[in-house]
Image (tube, rainbow, N blue to C red; front, side, top):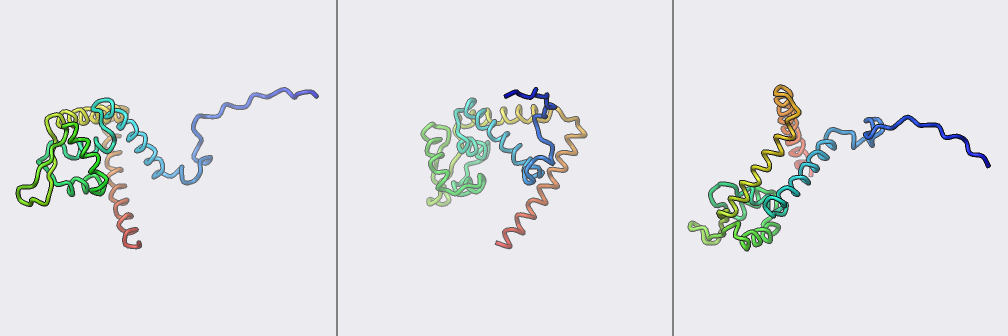
Amino acid sequence: MTEKPKTAKASQPDTAPDAELAPITAMMSSRLMVLANLLKRGAILRYKRLAGLSSVEFGLVASLGRRPPMSVVRLAEAVGMDKGQISRALAELVARKLVAKAVNPRDNRETLVSLTRGGLAAHDAIVAGAQERNRRLLEQLGPHELELLLAHIDRLTVTAAEMLAAEKELS
């Protein structure tokens, strides 16, 4: 049996053109989700390294920020999780002395949470890390390109919020 000589194929690009992608993966919304997921995964790794925080913990520390104490219910709303989901993370942050809990003096049924000095240091590390990541991500764009990008994102966000509201009405 004789083998036919192999002909060299044209090298394929690392990324497939839109026509070769599954239709849904070529959509702008899918591309934005891929970007958002890559940014989130990088952030999780960075904040674990910088402050020793899990993704839920850094979300809580970032949301508490340099604000007055807030109720656990309000914090849960701010991070988009239910109270039960954040209770374990808050317990860990309290145990590590990053968050302090106190009874609300106006309503003793309500618990208020705030960052301690250690929590503020972790918050500041998160903010500095986020600013560096943001700078690095956007440094490739000129001022006009950045202005246009942000304007487009704002417009798309408004439309996406309207679409969500419409879906909620239909559900």
